[in-house]
Image 1 (cartoon, rainbow, N blue to C red):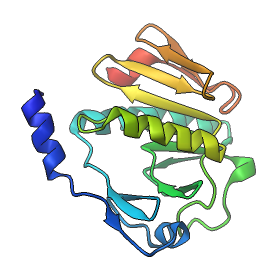
Image 2: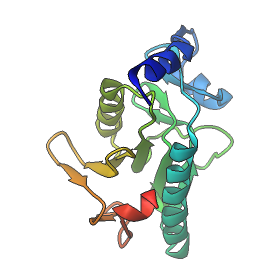
Image 3: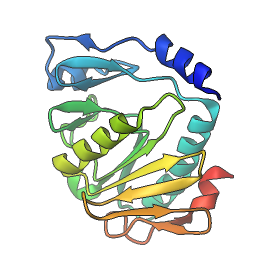
Length: 188
């Protein structure tokens, strides 16, 4: 994709829309294709096939492990209250101890673990802002998956940041104990 294609893709995205709804109302309504940030509905781009494939692989490996070990639940693009935002990570995990009772709407708490797969139309500062919002709200671990360089950046805090490449093995650390997969598996 060249610079002109990125620019054209960005022009197709609509600007954020101001709204009077609260983050709680946003999570109840489950508005498809949007996240809620600072009183605005921010459009999410439709995932590319590559983005969707990576998200599906992460979901498969994580869901299989979490289910077999009864550690909690895995969600795909579900709504979560993250501070004063309504966010929809590509993949998320909530441990059994934190599972919300009402699954008919978005989660009133942030996920324990969130995965954001970078899309061709994503802007780096927005990704960084999302990671910061997750961490500030109490998410214990965030993976940012980048398909061009085939890397996964793992954030535990502002100072605990590690980049993993193809030959490396990702783990769930203390958030999803015992979970592991090779970075290369996500991009095969």
